[in-house]
Image 1: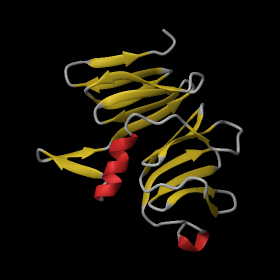
Image 2 (image 1 turned 180 degrees about the vertical axis):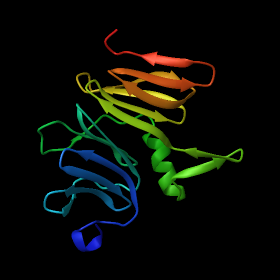
Image 3 (image 1 turned 90 degrees about the horizontal axis):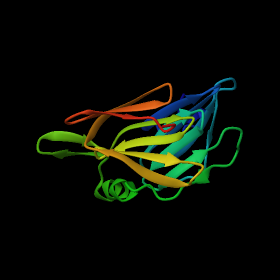
Amino acid sequence: YGAAEGLPDEAIQSIAVQGDVVWLATLSGLAKLEIGSGRINRIPSIVFTIGELAVGDSGVWLLSDAGAYRLPPGSLEWQKLPEFPGTASLASAVRTGFWWFMWGNKEIVLIEAMLANRDGLYVLQNRQLWRYVPAEGKWHSIVKDAWQLLEQRGTVWAMCTEAVARYDPSS
């Protein structure tokens, strides 16, 4: 799939599959590929330069230099979320012209991981784990100095420098 099918930009930064739809975050914004028809539709209401996608039971999520967004299950309208605490560093990276940077001879990725589950969205950014709770409309800091993120049956695990963090929102 390319420009002939409606892809806004060939530089794809993130991809997420939700049923028969493939969501694409490109350098020119968000697009939706309908697998059955092969059509790609640009989502003009959300404009950004860098973005990361996640899909879960709580919907489709986009975190970008222009903010955080959620498409709830069954909805056709994207909701703009309260400002993600790391949005300023993402926007700064766009202004200075890079998506990841070098620090002490190490490549630092601005969004290390993102996952969505029935409880909301988890973002690992600049070694800090954040959680967005849709029912509260708030971002919460979960743990600092984290390096890796995964989820199993509702429990979120983060590998940290000196430990492993376990977060279960139901407890």
